[in-house]
Image (tube, rainbow, N blue to C red; front, side, top):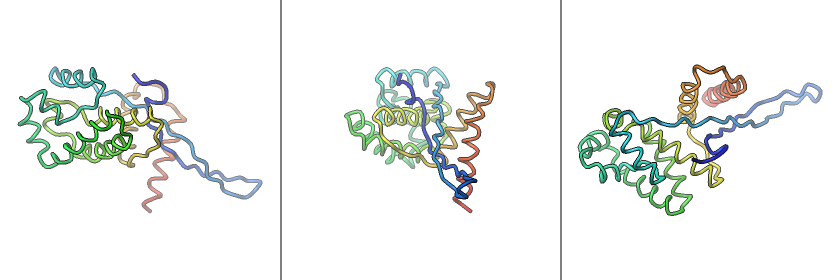
Length: 193
């Protein structure tokens, strides 16, 4: 596993502070650290697929899934035929990323964000599992490990927050985290009005 902050996505949050004595407003940036919640396989086939890629320390490449599990080709094609060209490009970025290209990891995360919008599918809910979220977490950790700065789309950040909150729903509330999320959500709404 990857250590420390590498298990988090960090989203900058702007906070405006009114300095009473100076009569000025200052903007400060605080880091909203969102813990990446592991994805659990949904069944035995999913567990096999996840374990295959985990053992290789690789993202789950849909092209490689079809090579390793040919019995899933029809289900994968039926679910992803409209975006198969994007999955092929993503597969290339995975391969060059594993070869050491940081640009490929960066491009791979943006392709993954895009493709995540088309989930869930029959292939992911019945056979593969939530491989897109697994890949998103994997790519965030790879870019963190490399010390790369990057930002995700607001919808992806909201998705990560939702996953984190679901995982911690039975825990005591983290007031600082909740306040930063509230400020982040306020800033998002302000952008559009």
